[in-house]
Length: 231
Image (cartoon, rainbow, N blue to C red; front, side, top):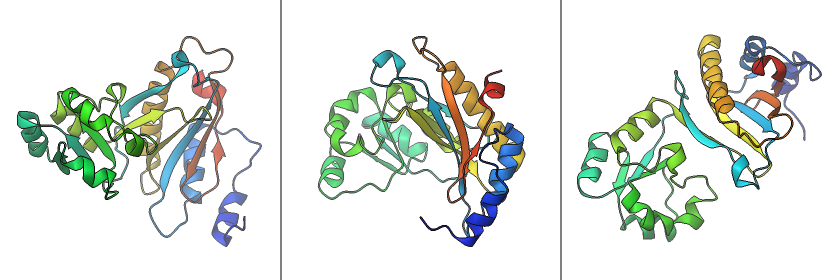
C-alpha cells in the first residue's frame, strides 16, 4: 500500500520497536495526525481473552470525561411516556414498530447508537440481522436497554462509548480527536483503561493485555508499554 508524503514524514518520528509511555505516545499520535480533517484518535487493545467462551467476553461502556468530539445520533425505541421522555431528552429519533420496515427494507441507518426500553426488545430483536453486524444492537451491559432513557441519552451525548471484543479478541475504541489537548486525550485514555482493567474476566489465562496501540485515523500506530499501564 502506497503511503502519502505526510504519512511517511509522520511515521519517521515513531520507532516501531519502542514501547512508549502514555504521554509520549499521545504527543506522537497528535503530531502524526496531519490529515486535512480532524482525525479521530483510537485505541486498539489486543487481549489474551478467548471471546468464544462466554466467561471471557468483554463488553461494557464508559463515559469519557471530555467526550469523543463526535456528534452522536441516537435512535430510541420506546412507547408512551418513555417515548415522551426520549423526545424531551432530545433523542434524534424516537419510534416503535413503524421503524422496522424503514430500517429493514429501506436500509435507513442514519443513527450511531440505539437505545431501547426492555419492553421494546421483542420488536428490536427483529432487526438483529441488520443491527447486529453493525454493532448497533442495544445491550443491557452497555446501558442501552433501560427504562431510564433520559440517563442513557444524556450519558451518550456526554461522551459515553461502548467497548467490546471483536472476533479477533481486539477492542477498538475512540478516545477523542486530534484537536483535543494532550491532557484531554490522557484523561479519556486513563478513564477507558480503568474500565477495561475492571472488566478483566477472572478466567483469562496468561496476559490480559498483549498490546495497546494508539493511532489516528490516517496516521501510524504507536505502541504503548503495557507493563507500565498495568503497573
